[in-house]
Length: 276
Image 1: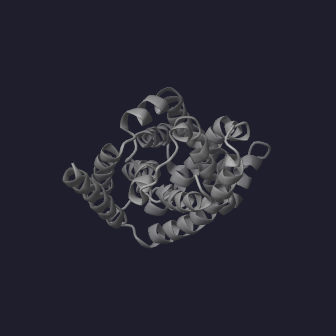
Image 2 (image 1 turned 90 degrees about the vertical axis):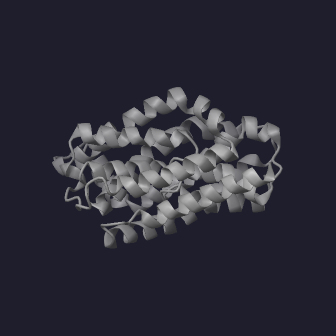
Image 3 (image 1 turned 135 degrees about the vertical axis):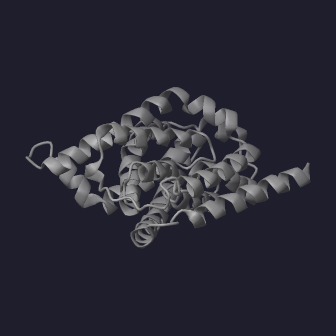
């Protein structure tokens, strides 16, 4: 990929990874919109490590943005901070299901559904999940804070992360919606979703990023590093805007994201139908 392609891709990824509109679907649709003719060898061997490097930029941003909480969580291993220790175990309970399913199913699912039409279709389904999922409680606002969750509820929320293995489904959208179902306040559901994202992304980075350092494509690691920085900057503004949005919108907060998914997914499907 060129520097310009990398920067565009990184900015799109940094925004869509945290907004509930599926970064994986946008990873499929971005080259489609810009008519990029990417090297098949790059797509087959190096695209996943490249993408994970962009995600790593997002993870670093999340660690910095929620730095106070992560510091307390780590310190709770050695101190008597029961509240932070429980939060650590809640995050662990939410991480394990997605990590196990991801290790087993990530490759076959992404290869099976990673085309423009399927990404657009599942993006529309994601819109319905966002729109109706927020309303299953009959419009009643959640009252729970994160530490009010049981470990079983945290595991259920974490399990919904696995939907993101299919391009079109949003990891953050699925986990936030599941958080609503568990009775979390909108802001706390968004916060827990961000906290859950960090260990998953860091774990994937430990596995995939070293592959970039041993690639036979000249300059790919350096380009990926630039992309990771750009993605992290975009993610910072995304998480800031998202947390402000959910702080001030406890009802119908997902509605604009649902409409976005419907319009984008529907537009792509219509254009694909016409082109055929």
